[in-house]
Image 1 (cartoon, rainbow, N blue to C red):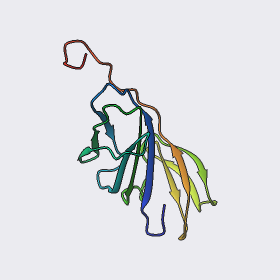
Image 2: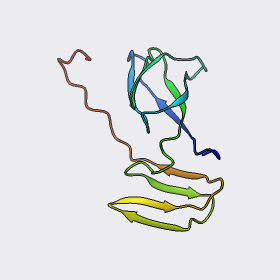
Image 3: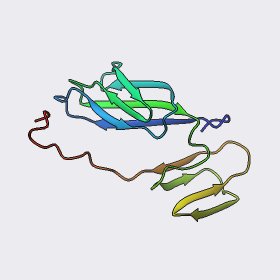
Image 4: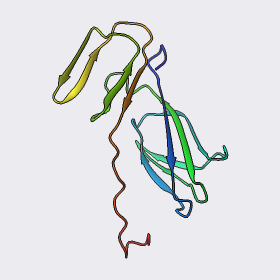
Length: 129
């Protein structure tokens, strides 16, 4: 996170090179400075619809997605697990099953992980197989 509260999100994915596109759910619907690259550093086309992104990845085996968002500065994503905090917060508690941090002003680095959600199983007859 930068001093202005903007979070830089980065994601690396292994993808099936025979699929023409992949669908991703972003951490926020308001994003800026989006960059999507394949394993060779080639820019990939994408479409955004709110927090949903379609990346046109035919032929790619790896996709690297990076973007900035100011939408995460008030809350951590639901289901997240804190891995690292650069300093000791004023308070750490849970509220309705969510982690709540009370932070004093200044720069912070907070690393967290999200649970892996497997893609829906492909079924014959839906045009994908």
